Length: 469
Ligand SMILES: Cc1cc2nc3c(=O)[nH]c(=O)nc-3n(C[C@H](O)[C@H](O)[C@H](O)COP(=O)(O)OP(=O)(O)OC[C@H]3O[C@@H](n4cnc5c(N)ncnc54)[C@H](O)[C@@H]3O)c2cc1C
Image (cartoon, rainbow, N blue to C red; front, side, top):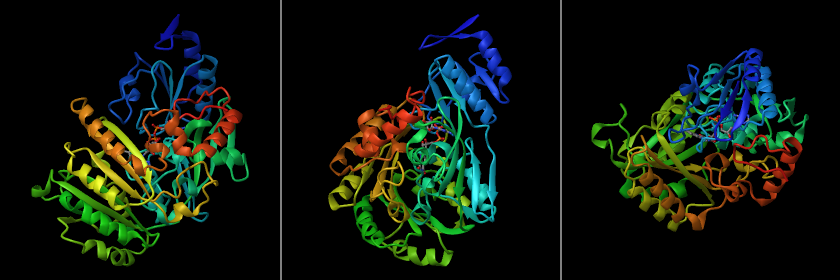
């Protein structure tokens, strides 16, 4: 018997599929199996794809078997860590999903100040284990994001200005190549590959384990958002720009434009109101954080101030309720060099046009330790960016999605005179020109040469794809 896998029409031999199943420690799921609907879902509800096979790998051997099977049968492969790719690259129609979400081992070495993390671990799971010992590595700002995809693109987070991007703390990876071979990459093993995986995404193979350096942090930090009415956005941003001009590396901020969500900490009269918030995290002693944030806290008339001492883990989960699984998400992103007056006015104006309570914009303060690593030291591009903007047009279902997407596009287009680079992990499926923008032309060319060495047939192509030179 053969199975026809739309839309590529690859014929799969039933016996071969059964054989694959017997070699796995994890699970093999097909369309008529229990759990298929659950496991084909990704975080972004606007993505609806039907893979022929989902291999839920329990370890390195399963990943190898899956890669070899897919290669032998000419299957398109999607690789899934946390499933949070904005454009849904971790699921495909008709091919195979190599799902790493069962691979959850985390081992912290307190003496060596390192942590080994398997590829299915989510940010919150990693933070919990490291914080148990008062340690942390830079991770992102929503706990249910995957460590794997975030790291391979770079990794922006609350402590990056002090401790660098996630990749700046990466010491080594274990990886399965397109040939199904196991390799290590670090500063001394396959150094070219190690350069490439630090920003080059999933283009070079499937990482099964990461090793990071960790740093003492918390467990309490001075952190949280301060809100002003959107009408004051231009004033707040001008003050903010001048205030952060010479702030310490310990301080990291994200400006958010949104309608205030209905959360227990938000007074009822403020729910739904358009606001601009500056959210902060001080990666150092709580008292020093309080002092550093005093000028911001006393600027103008904040409507709500939730910035104070709190466990780092609590701060890390602050944005979780804003990004649940299954809503429809669209993002446009760009880096900008600085917040000039014109740009500030564009931001203020588009903030006033927010309609949906779940749509918003986040402006990330870059610099600090991120900018002190050499631009050519890793594949990540954009270290000199002043800010990264992330414009999210979201809706709960298909209803109203087009309007939110149009708002995000219009906002992004209005900023186009100031676009510099773009963070690869904040791209949708936007084509080669935008991927080239994410790496810069020189680095993009270097990456294509590296791709030719490690994946000449472009087996790993469902990603922000770097085609082999
Ligand atoms: C709610 C939300 C919050 C976010 N916050 C941040 C943030 O704070 N900082 C930040 O830097 N980014 C952030 N991002 C962007 C995020 O880094 C990317 O979406 C990232 O790709 C998610 O990784 P994942 O493992 O969850 O995704 P997946 O969808 O599983 O994978 C994404 C991509 O990585 C590849 N990939 C995944 N695992 C592996 C692996 N083990 N080996 C090889 N390739 C692999 C996949 O093939 C796919 O192309 C956020 C995204 C979302 C949706």
